[in-house]
Image (cartoon, rainbow, N blue to C red; front, side, top):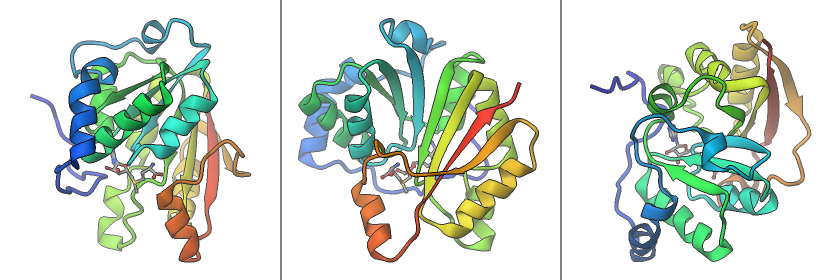
Length: 220
Ligand SMILES: C[S@@+](CC[C@H](N)C(=O)[O-])C[C@H]1O[C@@H](n2cnc3c(N)ncnc32)[C@H](O)[C@@H]1O
């Protein structure tokens, strides 16, 4: 039996895909999707790649696909629970003819615990995680001490996690959570020019939200 986290970090939304998403799913999941079976070794999955990165919560996937297109020498595994997002990203993979991006669809906690050995990744990307602004929902924020322990164990030595958020109180929460652990070092960084502006981020900026990028490195 798979143990599900008590406090899901994602919202349960409809899994209804548009026709285009459904068709992309039918055509391409078997090629670019990874089933939840056994252990996955990212270096073997992308034998030509110089490093391997997992993105957690790819959403509708425009940003994920553009980053993978920018860095063909890196192997990416995108994780998203929301099926319409997976279908949309499969469509982007087809259009951009990406060879270096594979997808998984489950809670990232479960995926990491069950399907990857320790020291599997050079980096994690976590872009605009659900901010859970209400105090009673803070426990659902994905950045928690246990999550940092999990990420730390799955990173290779010297690996990193890059986070972006458009919710200032969440950026502060992230800084406090990292400050409270000896496992990582780092903090705010300039927005890297290769991180694409997604529709989601654009909406936040139009509402006046300030975007914070943070990067933390694994301490051994
Ligand atoms: C606010 S959206 C941002 C999506 C995308 N990164 C972007 O910048 O547009 C956060 C996404 O993370 C996904 N998510 C949240 N918790 C997750 C988890 N534990 N495992 C996998 N996906 C998760 C949600 O389903 C949602 O699509």
